[in-house]
Image (cartoon, rainbow over all chains, first blue to last red; front, top):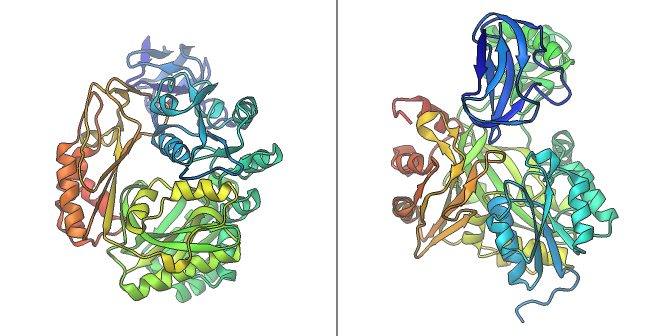
Length: 77
Length: 456
């Protein structure tokens, strides 16, 4: 089990833009360099990568929720 | 009474941060009441403190608040305002918003929604420029194939850019050095445009190696229009300006007059109303200038023009919107002295300009002759993470450019902000550089400087 945490404070986005499909869903197979979400702070968009290969087991944050550094965003297993 | 309002007794400022403060102050000086809007994160900010009334406009995310037309209009009606000033960013260049404001019987402080729809649209503005015989960047129509691209490239000359018609915001652009490069990159560019934008249309545009970004300020009442000379805005990082000066150190007086005359002709032909800016790329070798786009609103860097011309642009916007004819003739406008603005952003120059929201724990502002600070800061205030990182603009004015640079150095040394990282340190270093001292830097200078050995 691997927890993907937010390194920064900001707004959590599951999609690259409002009209697009989410980057991943529960059950998606991911590689270490797969982008899982964006965290935006002051108009700077930061791509958060999986870091490990595996399946998305849980998505811990809501789209557009404000997250703090250290918050768990995804669980990959 | 300094000024007696005719129609605008109460104005809603549909913005936040330092520009909301700037507009509220201008309204108060004209004996108009000002209404601020805020989100939870912005409650109690300087704009709310200074305004006569303030209303919560929605949740923190901009699209749920400052960008939400319905919410803004609801407050405008509830507060019974006579006018809305949009500031810059957010809804300021949204033609639909301007139209909805007009339809609600409220004065939009700026051009008509039709003008915004035309001049705010890059393609339409370029058409208007051609109609007004204002030079635009040499470019080709959409290309059929490589053979046509190679033929057309002969007319423009290398280096050049391959641009996707459906691209924008710096995306879908490829740099090509020579014919070999065009042969290699053409089909890749078409394939990339097809997959990224769903439209494989590409065209070629001339590329300027040492381009400078120079813009011209205009002001009109829908009938009469004047220009207020130029600003040099070449100091940019990721297409965001960070330092601006007026007048531009790159122009001789003959080129300046030609550039300003071009901009004015175009603004006159569309019967421009309000404050607007025409942006150009300038090639100092050939002294050629090329129209890029028009901003149909007040700009961040308006203050430097105010200082060198003596015209208060935000005040004039409000007076024009209030129904007063433009109070200046072109012959009233002349340049005096030199002004420089630096944008104080809550960003860490030591860490790739990463945003730095947070609480201001200590604040000591520069003061004295020739210093102007347009700011949203006060000690104890928390800079929210949701919006732009611009927190203050330090503007200096002096008789000459060297004196203005010296004053800027002095002011930056006095400026102390603690609790968040800021770009103050970057500017302290930057203004020592010989290219900046000489007033000769292109739009590529800052990124080269940051990426270079200087370690900033």
